[in-house]
Image (cartoon, rainbow, N blue to C red; front, top):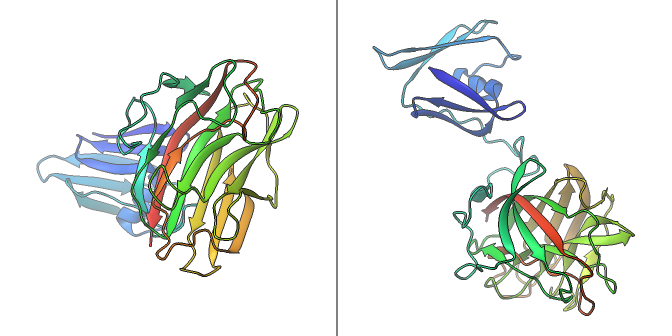
Length: 316
């Protein structure tokens, strides 16, 4: 039989004896519209398999007639820009990482051989599977207790989405607003870091997600892109989806772009920037290098960062 199983509210995986498989994040309506080349509003659907002819029969009870598909056909929806889980992904991107962090050493995630730190663990947080990064009590500012990343890419465009939160009562750095989460780099994983996602402290017990840049062609020092719209978050309130799309500049040209979304709200737009001064600028890798603070100071308690479901795509 054809089986629909909910992954998240309103979205489905579809399997037929392990053969017919709809990609994740595909809605029942999208799949049927693609399979039948018809547009309709959420019909009642009758489904059965004709084992003799190895056909799948999709019957649209609310008009549209019936369509048959070979058993081994893979139904793929029209790849428009974005998807229900990654709504701001541009069109034409190639997925290079889609990691739910439901197991250790996830496929496609490496850090020059991986950092097997005792401060990394897979946990369930806010009903999601996450990597938990531990900051021991008295941990020194300006360092990260663990790191991991995805090498490769070498493309003009990079899009990333991840789920994120800091532990309740998070101790912000006393001398800076820096709580780094994720980097995108224009060289090897340990090299130049034009962009990093930062939880910028904005008051006692709150932060906002901002785009920080450092070592760019415009400035060798860190600068913050002030958000057009601020979305504030209190640590421990639950996972936040953060998405960003970076477009690398052409050689020697101020035509780079960057955009940041927090829970599907566009907070930051940057245009006319030279992120890299190299002869052939590309986004080559991304990494979790969650540095606490800009140097000095110590943690007054044990704290955690939670990073869930990493998705990354690239294109020229």
